[in-house]
Image (cartoon, rainbow, N blue to C red):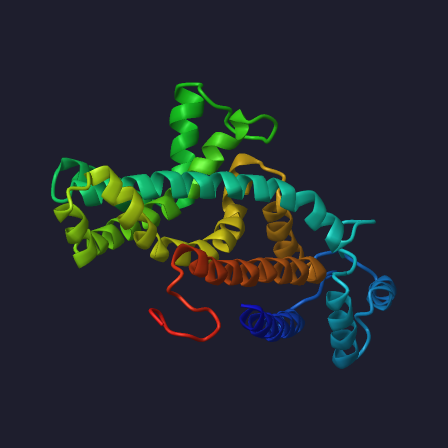
Length: 311
């Protein structure tokens, strides 16, 4: 296990270096600069700003300095937010995005697994059809459309929830549902197909022949093995929900990291764009590593250190 984790950490460092490098050079070849949007900015002031932020240095000098800052987890100052660093923006915005993302992930897992199990146990019956219709709708309807519908129905028409802002728990319900609807649908379909495959295995038939009840068979034997594809999906899901919250945060007026990221793109705020990209890349890499480690706990037959299943 320790050898496997060490090897994966080395791969993560290489992947992170490639991401940092690609992001740095993409920002440099993009047209314009952080001060292009300023109206009638005198050349002398623009030159002073470039010198202040080190943008007048050769690309290799800027690249080396940025690698050193990233190694220290220092993403530098923001070009547009005065007296604030990228780390300050991440520290302020990410906790909000994290809470929203975790609520969405909880809803997606809880209802997705539940719908998938119901659909598999009532295969080709009305619960199965109903669950799959919900899943298809969740996959087909984009999150921003779902957000608008939820705001119109439950906030404007029924008045059950606030329309926007981020103050109380009630303000988190609609954005969490909008953000978690699509992954919930994917998890429901994954759970259903995996459960159907597991329920057709010989050991399930043996358990039924022994007289075990359907509930015992489902809980003790079927669900644990059926959840492996869902766990595989949870790694990229964690990062994709957090990054996918950008649009939802804008719609609901949530002061999360997504608002800073969207604004930084329109403002050509290089340091914020690169810092947030690196930050979310680390989240994705760590999530995938945790998922791989979780395999060994869910199914002990899986050997992480290079062995084969069943050895």
